[in-house]
Length: 437
Image (cartoon, rainbow, N blue to C red; front, side, top):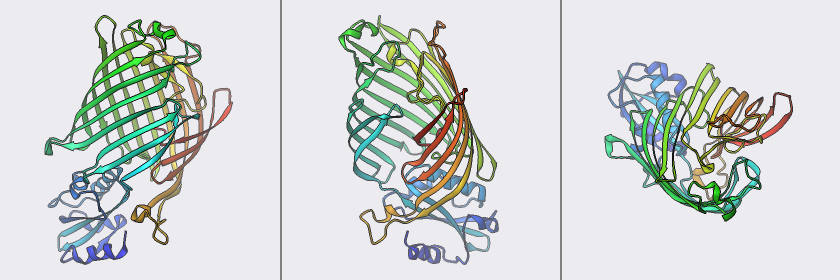
């Protein structure tokens, strides 16, 4: 962000502006009437995308608490590396707002290199193209092709807002991929081939509440020797799905929450005449409580349940995507699952923003205002899986505890390096990307 640009807006955007303020100085403007809102730094993103995330409108009374909530909602668009809101006096009883954003790099082809099942010995590689801000409206287009472990490809498009004030959204995806079967009953693991599509249509009420309907279809193929695992008793299976979902989300920052609620409910029915008919449903409830300043307690309880005969390819697992730290590589299988976690989070080095555009790099302003910082966490995890008929692979209940460092870095958001113990105090090092929950 060029300093002279900020200065010009501070000086001229508000005709009578005489005082500008950072968040720490907001108290002097409390209760004053908001006369103007100006957005700076959004070279690609349209103003409306930013302004529609704000509860504060022109004509409202200034509220420091609400302004900070607005800033975090804009940050949660994941379009910007940094968002700041400044206040400037524009009259005896009026205040103007200046929103200063630093955009992320929005379009690029990129090499793919990623982990499968959160395991460092299961790599995939390939190429992808991402546009995360089409027409400056936060629409996202993704196309990827990868090889190595679980090879495949996908194409998806997301429109997070259409229909004006009705605020509808949708996501459409098509894909084809090979996945190693996760079932623990039959070894070695065999290839499951998936070709299909999914479509999600939803509506957002206000700023925090979402309701969705989901349609999907999978064509699943198994090797001939494992055809008996398919409900069709053939080497292939048609699996159409219909589902509904509900989400309530008041997290302050998606990348590293310290306050708010996250409640996600779903139900998905998969049925094919004379072959299968089963229901999967569940809830994921998370609570984040700020104890003191940036010290926070994060709590999670999640459950996935089923009704009907669930085929191998739709069972629930621990030890793949969902893992228990302390028994990170221990795998369990069932058609029901429950998870509980608690984590105390506290900052060590507060997030600072740096510029890496030294000498004029090809990234330009996309290399500016990049966040870096360090937090730490102490955690306890627990989880269990079981079958409807009561049969399980013993033991089906896993627990662990430990602590670690959380590095706040650009684009990846969080890199975690943790050390965890199982109940017998056997330790393990965990390196993972993204906040735990």
